[in-house]
Length: 604
Image (tube, rainbow, N blue to C red; front, side, top):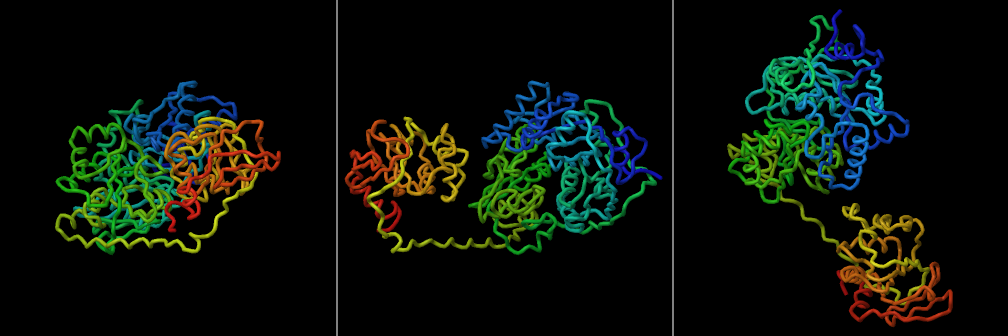
């Protein structure tokens, strides 16, 4: 009885002549990879367990989910990994290199018949070259780093036979979307798959990567494509070690076989929320597009960029549409520039990112906002995966055509002029502030407990750090107040409505961020008193109806926790705890008027 492709790879790496589905084996790993997304937890696990590294030459960090480090948490994570790598001699593929799984193939630290594990759930993209790849959690990857192997349950294999060849205009992405539509989200659940038929045999490496990358979206462990002579030759040029490709035995036993007819496949699209909810582009009602993303581990290869450039050449992105393009690796980025594709993209109005994952995993480019409709060449369109909007999945050609049309269309529709009328966006209802609410009386004499923060030049990053600037909900801003001021990080938990803040000179120095005022309002703080204020901060507070009073106070006049009465119009401050009276600069008539209205933008 013969073995399937995955069984032969796993047996060879378990040091066994054969393995059977359901068996648990110790699997030797040729390439052990952690990304900036998950890598720090791998480091934490290893340090906590007091473990070292089995073989640094087989161990890699790849920084691809946010290669720019534009998110401070990602920047910190990358630095944690760099420090650990320097200590133990681990290879770092830094922010200029691109997607780790693609680097593994390009740099030859994975090869047909090899094994790779990563914190990337799409590590099974290695099926494109007939290798075994698997995404795993932080503990598993830490074990692979430390011991060079992980336990693994041998999966049963499904044989997928494609009949027919898609007509011109249908791409590898259309082929795999049609497969996902036919099999559903659970069609390959818990199984490896082997893909056969002329439709996959004729695919180049880029097309095989596209197809293999979506096994996860069908519940599969991996989708393996037996490597062609061209793929083997490409890998031999790069591999760091000799290899022989692995193929299934002629008498291999499969859990089941599936036949999919792709002879009539046209350009396909997955509707938002479900990669398997696939229809033909032509059958989709006229759908307005706000943004387009071309890239990802699924469609960021050179061939994908060329397909997009072919559509975009001599055309412009539709008004109001944003087009974002991210090559998969630095080598592809450079080649695209050398071939003049960047000129095409920039002339069309696209934003080009440095190599990396793009929109997935809250990445550096490709996120969308509330209500935004995106056409993406990625592999997932789950709610929230690429932002707060809705995401369609399509090929690079369809994505590029949709960017030009401003509505979902195929490249053929765009060329022929058969473009639906772009639906008009529904107007956003204008919120009308209740006049009674706007004119409600606001207290002009305040009493409350005072927090004394004896420090000068407390800047807006100390008050409301820039890592939280994307927060737009005022109710959620309070939890970040003083979050970057040493010794005051727990202020939101200790503050109570009605409290006052007393601080030193130049309070609110720095940026113009309104959140540095709103965060205190969110906590119920009723007034800010300081020896002096940063000019922009003072204006922001006044405009938001947050009373600000300047008082050249001293430590013998007030202590933390005292109760103060503050008269806004006169500037009189009474320390009720100590029975003393003081005077601050009173609020001006303009300030009082804005305060009484409830803010600069409230109607009088």
